[in-house]
Length: 472
Picture 1 (cartoon, helix red, strand yellow):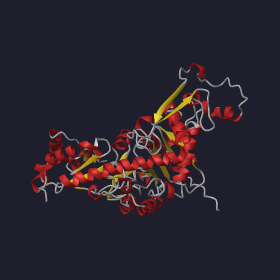
Picture 2 (cartoon, rainbow, N blue to C red):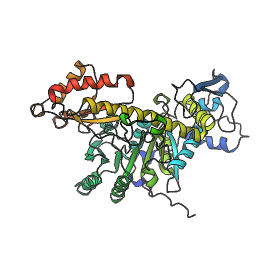
Picture 3 (cartoon, rainbow, N blue to C red):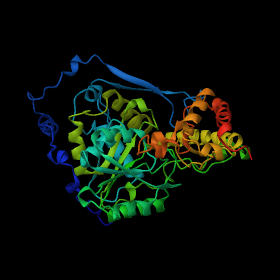
Picture 4 (cartoon, helix red, strand yellow):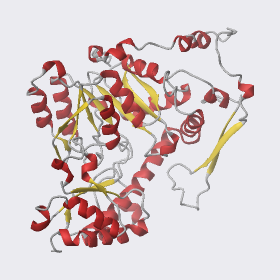
């Protein structure tokens, strides 16, 4: 089998700050302790683990592939104890101690194995480094390359936290038009080709290729290849922010056509039929992939990981060592115990299928209700992944000509006791006249109780009535 190529060196695109960023001098001594267990260290300013008041931590978790709401299957107790390492994970004191910015070894080993199983990167020197979720990871990825005055390419509708992260840094946002699959490659190519200031040419493009937030758009494999080709042509680095990657749900199935629920959702993607990631087609090492447990375990864990060439993950490690250090030890301990011992890769994949099923059921129910109540009032593309419907309000002729109409619609929704996110909040252009009355809203089917879906959508229909066409 031929060996994999080495990644291209894109370090010439680093910011001046990143070029100067080095390993913490104190952290750099850890390698000697790791290499020689007979060393007696008088150098490390670490608190003694006997002063940690935590003997063990534990949790009760669902069996892999079983919903926590299913009381017919017993849950499983897991725990991590101090000074009791196992063959697969460290003792609790190791998780609670200072460490380097790469993460506790058993945690990072699992996500590295998982990345190989799912994405199988095409170059040899890829690596992973921990993050405290994708917002933290995005901040670190941006800091690698950008400083005040630079320009970041984004979708014409994009994640508000990304907007608010870069705006105070003095980074300009350059939006690119989207269609039902997300960013349009020809529009990205046109932007880069016609850029008339070479000294300020963008170096980064940020995107959420699966279940894009807010539009719910998912790129096909062909679209991903086209985007990647444009990135190669213009020497762009891609930040692949993919928190919804494992929430690929398959095609919508009207509940009226439902037969046996077990048969209805038997062909969910799991991990074997997922649309390949940008990372998986990256031959240059120009994709920085951001993954998180937030949408697939729990957001409060604040655990994630970044995949990129090692010379890039090294710089992120050094940044971690002067910021978060690493995700909280309690979180890493529980995740590591769950993944390495309680579930393993097979159990983890069963859990992902169960999560896909829950969101697919929610998506199908929500779409059914929207089609029943909102006909003639909105239009939308049914998402094949994620948590969102992106609604385009079909304004009547009078409303479409009225300045401030989307503000009126927002007030009407509040008066009818239903809340959606106005489209302008996702615009890289800010709250300008150009976007304030764009007739878009984001509806999430992920959180509200299923029993409240019909109430919410009927209220939305009532709120939209004065502004839209009549039912058809």
